[in-house]
Length: 90
Image 1 (spheres, rainbow, N blue to C red):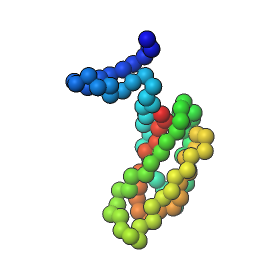
Image 2: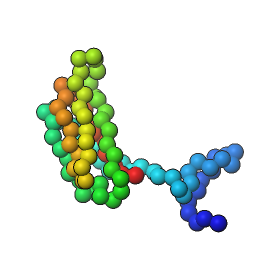
Image 3: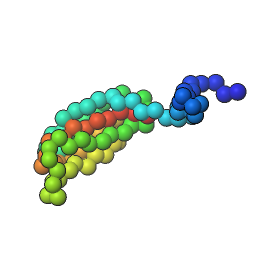
Image 4: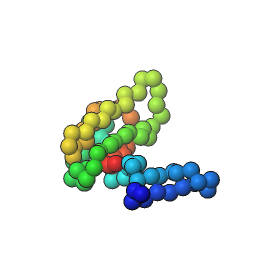
């Protein structure tokens, strides 16, 4: 019998099992509209992820930033709208 953490729904269906990966949000920062980067050593604790949340009204002419991750550094391109970057590990 495997050992680990498992949770079940009210009907007995597994919701989370010991083989699942669960993400952890490590930070949220306001992006610089000119582009830039963020370094956070805690990203070395797992597989890093990041996504962008636009905080302005998006149109077809909007320039949304692109995000790349290299080690513990998250880099992003310029944007013509304000945005937040949410990042963490899983």
